[in-house]
Length: 175
Image: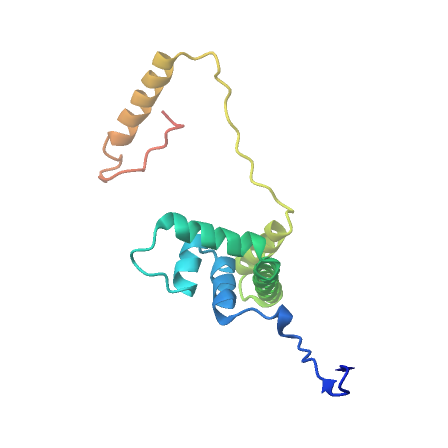
């Protein structure tokens, strides 16, 4: 409170609203944090009219997102919040699945169910790794590769053995 020369007090209103965003700014931040483009978020939050030039929308959206530090900070905060929430949900799900597998491994009625549960638990911690072995044939020409593919396709197109018809009962490796 200050006094001027006539001894009348002059009150100054102090508010912490300086850090608050407008409703439109908050809506813009929420949309951007949820993955919308700056221009789409701006159009939605600010009810942009049909005839507005795309360049105007882009400039306004870009300025709002990059030059307004309150907006930039809010987008970052919302994004971090969403990421943390997803991580927490994923962690809870992993714990639940692991607990279910442990229970199945200990209490399943059949040996095969217990082994399957233990196998899944082992995979979840990287205990087992699936290996894919490839045969190195770098000295093959394009015509060699084409001939090999034609041969394999011919094998796949043949009817199945043992009186059954259909696809897929022959192995490419066996030809």
